[in-house]
Image (tube, rainbow, N blue to C red; front, side, top):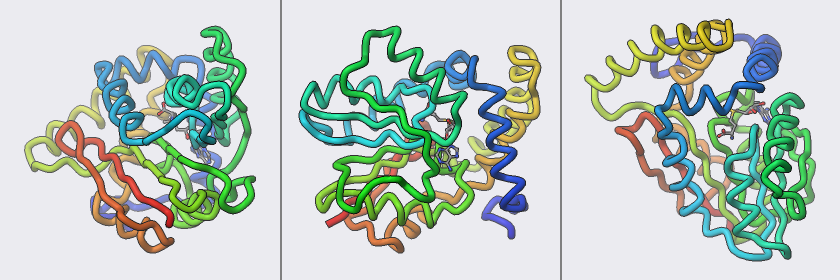
Length: 245
Ligand code: SAM
């Protein structure tokens, strides 16, 4: 199977194991690497995501593939004592780094940490107000299955936000970005973590991810309505939004 970038996708079981290896390897330095490699811009992308979430006091929010918990920390403050944030991730190393970080910041009372696979969410139907998945969907093997699972657990009126790398809007930006991600990313990975392979995976997984319109169509396919997306940083990243009614 090839994608709009022409890259081949890897076999299913290989992908699951490979993604697990990548995140076990990068967990301890994940936050540092995010700041370094995005020049801190991931913080801005995440702020826009929070602003689009409509999160309110008392709500139940799932920060899926939440990793080290940047979004969870913000949501924890927004939903207050009467609300709840679930940080869900498949990888126990990432969950542990996230839990330690948020506990160190004194965020304890309204956060749950649950190991889960996005493809089979362990919640009843119609039970969650808002789901966010930031830089996570790209790593999931069966993305349509995961989207269907998110749709199932959202309450009617609930919304899904997908923050993910996407397709740059202009050819020049694509070329620059390719140079950056295939040359610089693995080198920084090697210098900081002695791990260039994980950052080669990052570059490749970004190329293979569905573009803006394809992802929006996939959301509609499983039932999401009023879908839309917003490009950020020239389409390097896109924020998709959809509602369940
Ligand atoms: N959301 C965080 C952020 O924006 O900083 C972390 C993003 S990190 C790049 C991707 C996360 O997706 C990792 O923590 C990884 O373990 C998780 N992940 C990968 N496959 C998953 C799956 N099938 N279900 C749930 N989480 C998954």
